[in-house]
Length: 390
Image (cartoon, rainbow, N blue to C red; front, side, top):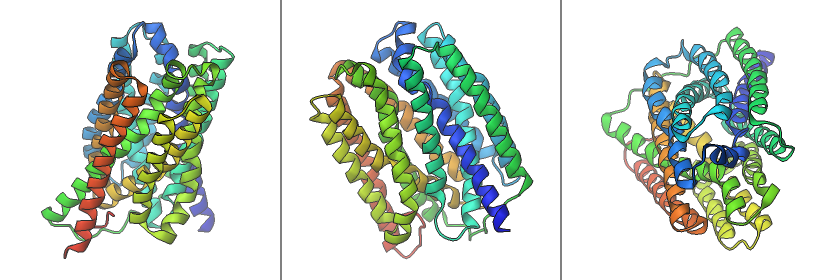
């Protein structure tokens, strides 16, 4: 049985790796796509809304299709959709086409996202101690690998089409083999908890929504805008692709330490400290005189963000063990809405007031949501009802 448990954990870890590596490959080359379709930052921001829009649509569908018996089927099909659509990014002729393609990819990605996290939560329920951060750490390993490949391909001027086609083919094969391995060793469903009252469920949803909106804002901005900011704001040249790489590497470090920290200090302390690390990173970025110091800021930012989503996913999945897709769909709806709003806002703000002010404004907005979620969670824990969130 230990061998089977290790095999299941390895398989779900590889699925997370592939998901992280997929989109990460084009992040260091977003500015190239922007230039090829002939738009500015504001136009790029509108096109990037597609990922969030597709994610919102996918979240609605995920709540209906994800059941304990359908999780791996949804996972396999969504992985195929991502692999087919991803290389088309290199071929879009204009911003509308990019918007439409990213809407499809966002739809497929959220189905992949929710299904793999539902499976991970089921595996977590059968494990002793926390493993969710390590599983999400594998996503960060994939993300780091993807950004490094994308940056390297950009530096040596590999054509974007060839780059994305090869990456997609490899990731598709690896992903489908991992899903097949998960199917060969079924994981027992998590124990069913007593159905919460509507009041307690409302409290839980408020916490999940606030935290997901905040974390989405704080994660998407460095992912999608660090390369462009380093090039346009700090004249980083070939270092511009290092922004997503450093951010992803810091998230990787944080996630592989997150399980130990939460087992020792608890969830509430971890989630509060994470915002402080992000604040330190944003502050460093705002006073950065050059690209090197800015990369330090993005690194601190990544350490803070790293522990946010693993816990939010777990909160959402355990909110209703009978229907993990419902809680995850609610969370991803807020997450993708946050991605969409933050991306568009960052594009407009960077054009209007510059990258420095844009980073500061977006952090303040996200911090308000994050602290509001923690406050509601703590008030719930002090009341008579038990809310297993923060």
